[in-house]
Image (spheres, rainbow, N blue to C red):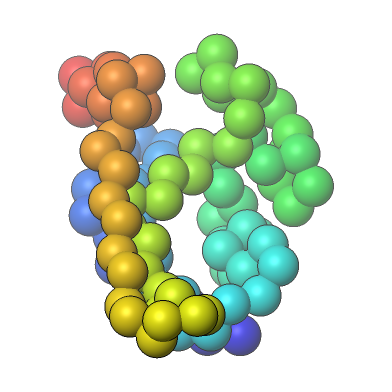
Length: 95
């Protein structure tokens, strides 16, 4: 499994990263970041499992998803903006 990542912002105890998966494996991002001792915030399996920022889930967001349609062979791409609650967390980290 291969992941490329880029640190976009650094905070006191956290970082915002952009990850590109060059291959796709189950839990790939979570496993890779736990391996380098920087687990995904809120990850109950590979991280501490502690609740951070009042999140009930992991601090992961799929901004862009693209794939080749299995029937017609066309490349499809979908984007999703960062949810408000995630943006609020980033604002609080920047203070």
